[in-house]
Length: 139
Image (cartoon, rainbow, N blue to C red; front, side):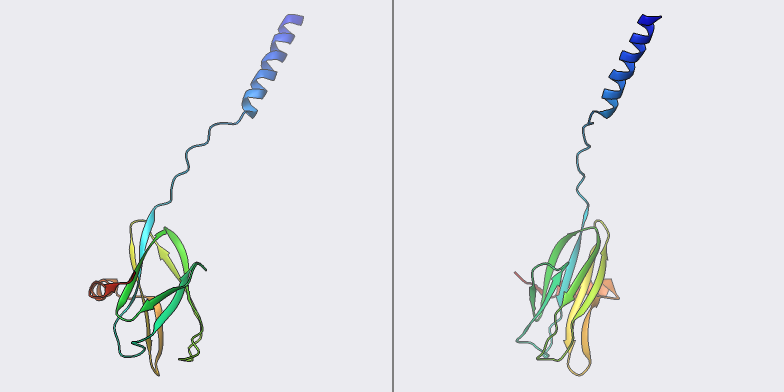
């Protein structure tokens, strides 16, 4: 009986050490990405100016008239923000953009004098794609 108890005790100890041993981790999967295109249709309003914005509090990007910028972003929610512009007296604005894997989202950034700022996901993505396709990509 003593040998049986010793064998059971030894088995229990070895199983507990196996249960506590670290298992190899599954390789981290990269999150799928989508594309964000921020575009600024050509207009006479502010034609010689650049408009600034950032994505997820990252570096400031400056968008020229009649241009677009393309960004590959992880799928999920992102925050776009433009700063206060004292020369046009328009306040800062923050917009949330959701990007699905493999999706392209068009985001318009335009200032119309006396009317205000358009800083939002384009309501008509098909029309936005056509508009952006006629613009030059900004370096």
